[in-house]
Image (spheres, helix red, strand yellow):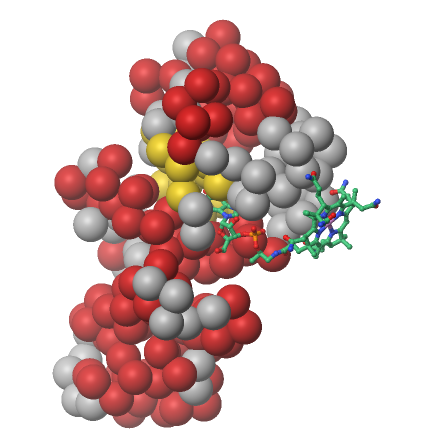
Length: 213
Ligand code: B1M
């Protein structure tokens, strides 16, 4: 692939036009879309995730990178086979019932997509029943729940109970996050992991199963 490092840098800097240009040049030259995705977009976004975790990059910059990368993914999507597009795990994500905050959840979604996961976003105010239905319908491997209010955190536990009652707990890994959420809370309600930020959410999700990386 031509200009690999330039594409990685453009993702980190959130340079949407440059990303599109490099992708078009590579597609015209016959570079496989999967190679452009993996070696350029995902490689760049992985660095963004790491920089976010180490506080070298902050929310506005990460949003710019994520948005720029998404436009690159859109350009590549028609050139990816179905298998390639969903090579990694499948995640259902949403903000829990009663909670309308979605900026952090959207960031997690974008970085997960950047890392190659297929993400089904249920939006905000998602009931435990709706999470259960979406896990079944999409045969998801991972559930991501976000909560920003102390009053809506208990909905995470309710959702995990509903998943157990539906007999799905063994087949799904559960990742939670949001400003008031903690590791202790995650352990208490029986989640599989807690991500303090979007970068670490991706790292934890990849650790859930070796073939997600
Ligand atoms: Co709201 N709000 N808000 N608000 N709001 C907070 C959360 C609050 C802390 C402000 C305050 O009082 N200091 C407070 C909660 C207090 C509490 O519960 N302890 C609060 C309140 C009270 C309310 C209302 C009740 C206000 C009212 O109406 N009286 C109301 C509730 C509405 C509802 O949800 N039912 C409300 C409404 C709103 C707006 C609609 C105005 C708006 C939301 C817009 C939107 O999301 N589209 C809003 C906002 C913007 C905020 C603050 C200012 C910013 C939240 C944010 O987007 N942060 C917030 C104060 C604050 O946090 N400083 C506040 C940026 C975002 C990138 O961070 O979401 O934490 P965050 O996500 C991070 C990590 O947490 C993590 O990764 C992200 C990136 O690093 N993460 C995950 C998040 N989800 C994850 C999932 C994962 C893993 C990691 O795995 C799946």
